[in-house]
Image 1 (cartoon, helix red, strand yellow):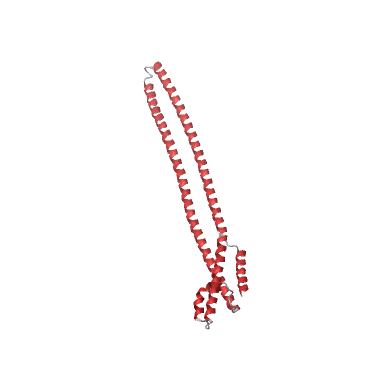
Image 2 (cartoon, one colour):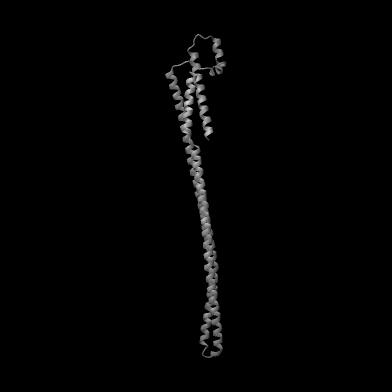
Length: 245
């Protein structure tokens, strides 16, 4: 970027120099009315050769004013180019920031949606298990109540049946406890996994933001013109003008 800007500035100096030589040549022709028609006809063919010749001696004050005008024109064009570059960088920064925010939002929404689907699936699965167990529990309670009503007649026989039912109820309670513990364990593991996924996503997003910010800083630094180089270029132009006098 710096080399291209240097080349553009040198080209601008050369164009300004050629324009000054051409204006000097035209003024010389206008101030020389004694030339013949043949000289006028040959003027167009020899203009390119006279451009390379030294300019005639002119007023020092006028030459300084023209040189300062050329330098001012170059500075204005250079300022306009910098403004265009800054505007383009700002627009690209806005576009990149919007795109990055959109990608970040999509990632977070995807994570939340995945977590929600997993939670709903687990809740649905274990809700079905609980519903089945509770239905069986209700049936067992009803049977136990019926057995209690018959204890008066069949104490011995119904006592055995009642003990069996109590044993079954104990087994069902143990099953419920095991399912509850399993549900809690699975839920904790799911929360840990989701937390790890969220932390990884946040770290990736932070890395992308840092890389994006570093890229912006590097682009901004590469577009800044070295003031020392620019001052040397102006001094070189002034020295060339003094030598050509």
